[in-house]
Image (tube, rainbow, N blue to C red; front, top):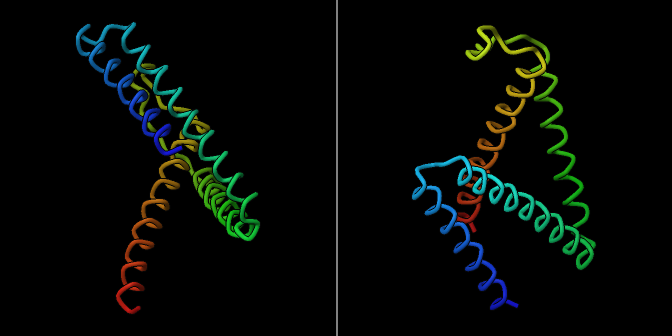
Length: 139
């Protein structure tokens, strides 16, 4: 199984490199950029599908992990919900240079909520790394 995964990883990397070289060789033509975007979308969807499959498969193999998965999902929903409602509570004017105006309220709410979720994820990752290192030092 590991050999198959290594071969699959190698094939994906070769395709990515070929598309990158194609984009550079054509000077960033629209066809090359379009092909790279489609490949990126494919990789993104494949990564999400693999993550979901592995999570569901892991829960089936180890039912004790279901509680942790539900808690994690609940935390993500709470962070996204709080970020959205915080962002919707006030108006931010983001300049829209193409139309010589400002973006509408719905666009700025989604943008600000996404930024807040990103900040929370960065802080959570940093705190987790620090606490894990401190915890490991005392063991």
